Image 1: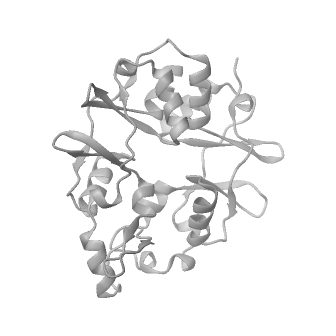
Image 2: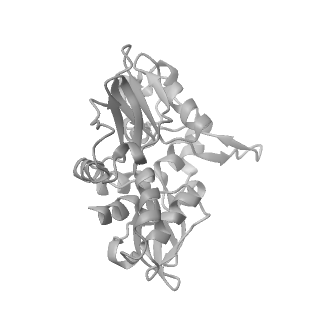
Length: 280
């Protein structure tokens, strides 16, 4: 039996539960990780914060704390508290079942000494690509009902679609052909061009309302479209490819989903979640 300790990653980005949202953002940007384990003063995991948490929980019109600067907002307000954990000696299928049942993408691994590591869908994908080649075609595991937006849709519409459908990514289309993809990272850490200087600058939106922002920022936010923030280096896969190839491509490109095409026509999407279902 393949155990969690054989697959998990011992390198974990952590922060303390008395720190602020700005510290989480800086850690994500510095390390390129999409999640952080939050520890208490006993070094016990008490929360997990992801890019999706920052995107969704910092949005909305109220309460008032959401309109504070991010260096004044406690990480406790946006993290997922009381995270599901597992232990090193359980089987990898136990981790897969927990992820699918609870709709999560990572599980802190604890032993008698505290935090021992973390197991993520990416770690399981590595196992999948090495051990399960030939078991499934992409078409066997993909999701055929693809949620898309037009490149000219506003960011507000994109956010509404992601929240309504409870999804972490949408495909951007032009004339029915896929041209880009939008994830929470594209929204939280959007880089846009300043209309006055032409210089690319980082804009941190966290999807909050524009009360209190100056007119220039309001104008820039209102002008942004799906085409402005999407990742246009779109990696696709043919529906008749081996599913293990999809796992390899996701790891090579550090992405969590691939649009599935039949020739050039969009016919589905395959994600890490779709792939790990093949392990159950």
